[in-house]
Image 1: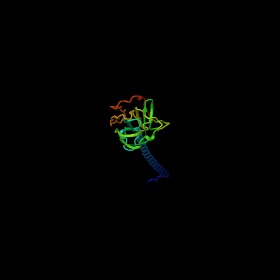
Image 2: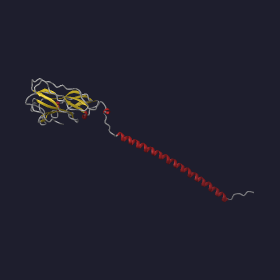
Image 3: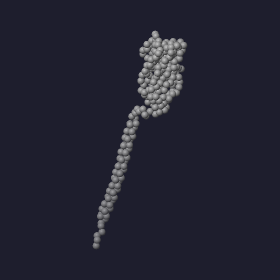
Image 4: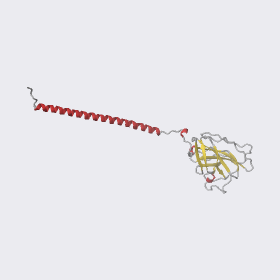
Length: 250
């Protein structure tokens, strides 16, 4: 005859089963926590890598680049990109003189420029009178116009008309100023905000003296250089004319 387990044995069996169930629950909770931690860590690493990539791209984009090919065509010209070269000429005293320039851009393939007294300045200089005449004193002398400029390809345009008299900040333009005398003057021009041109000869002669205009080459380079000084042929040089020294600079 088999002996039945005592109540104490039943209690010990129930305790073992309970402890096993608790151990299983603890193991499952631990595995769940480990899985969540691993998933969160991988997401954090991915986010950090993405942030570092974006930062590197931003730093690369902030690096300035200068390239002629990157300058977009069209739009308004930048004053610092405009080159103006006065054209050497001969004219009679006691009369108006057209101031002609060759204009082009250094970098922009094509752009528009509005010529006004507020966008350009031209000066005429003489020995001991570095600012004999200026558009700053005679703003109405500027010929307002809109022109299209191209890179390294000059166009010829009349920038202003000089009345043949001196000008001053106090007297401005008018009959109270002295007329220019025969002699060699120098012309400079610049887009306001840009670089002044080299000085170009303007030979003023007495009325009746034949005018022989210098021949000007239409070629140009993107980087401005000095304008050659051409001497008129077949015309006697006026006597008693002053010798030019320093010229006006902007």
